[in-house]
Image (cartoon, rainbow, N blue to C red; front, side, top):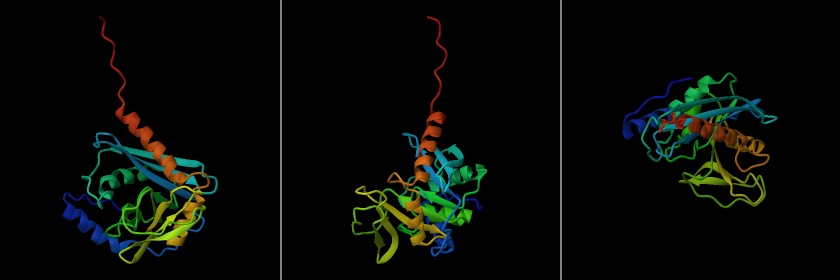
Length: 233
């Protein structure tokens, strides 16, 4: 696993994306039936100066959690649209290093190819780890699309500047869709299939749901201080 570069300026961060972008494998095809799938998510304190990055590894067949890890720290970069990955990468990679079960697929709460510079968090993590990676966003970052049909499995292309950068996927009947894009070593068709397999009951993949809970719990534990002793009156 490669260490993330630590840019100090917006120009340096954009240069890192430009340098790494050609390394992303956007064709795949990726594992059809991975045995283990990891979810990655980050929770932020209200102040914005603390975060907890969580990774949960699930059995792809049963969706039971097999392993989990957390890294609590501070954002590594200022908030800049299109450069969000640089805030979270060090903590996410730290959490991945703590795992004892190596996942066969990473599912990011964010975007991959569906990014202004075609190199979102899922692409960046995939290139640095070498693992097949997909992004599943709750809201779009770029692109236009036609509303998919109302039934689970309905999908439409997410198109930005004439290029298909992802798929708008309905994971539950009558529920708003999610935005799936390739990160690394996956095809878009396989990414969609994996997301459907990970959403048997809810809109978001179980990988995202479990990692979200873990990150929030870890952040609460890290930022909550027990009350001091009561002084005698």
